[in-house]
Image (cartoon, rainbow, N blue to C red; front, side):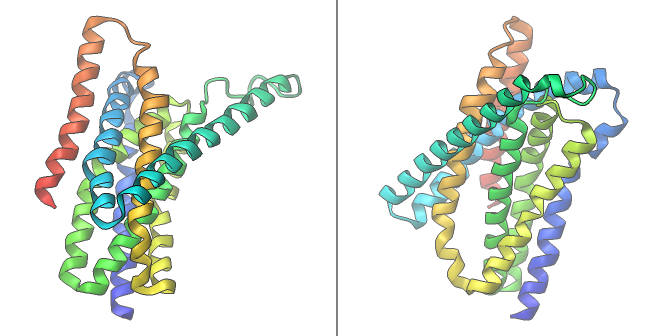
Length: 257
């Protein structure tokens, strides 16, 4: 048992390192980064929707009652809607009191989307931690296979999420730091399995459905409207290709599961 949890901790730490995939951008100029972010946001939309409909929802419905899983998806959508409402209210309230702040200290460009992405990612990574730890309780080979699948699955999503954080007005270093912190929530998933044992796995289907609802909300309410601000044919065409790539990557991962 102790050996299984040791492997679980080491595995989630390895998975967390994937969140630093955006470190290569530190050497890019702001002009090049802005051009890349344009496509990363589209990739993120495809990856989030693809993950929700290709992986999370099918897994949830496979293991749980349809009515409960459907309710969990709707709860996810609704709670992220409420959470964003609160963030928008707080942001607007802060603007009213802007006279008390200096222009240098107030970031006009930062959007609530960045915070929402971090929250959604933390929930998703927590679930990954539970799944990895539960897999190691079955056997070492099953745990390793699950870890590899999670790492491969995380790469396109982390790239897209990093692009979204930059698009939301976050600096590169801030985006990297908080992306890594959200990845570490997988450690809490391992701790949940240590405390609750293999029984923690019974909560996974509902958690997967809830996360899917959050991803659907973020993609539909925040990212897609941003993409529609681009009207030129050439940019819209490549934007669409990037979104299709996100879908394709999520379907392609089915071959590795």
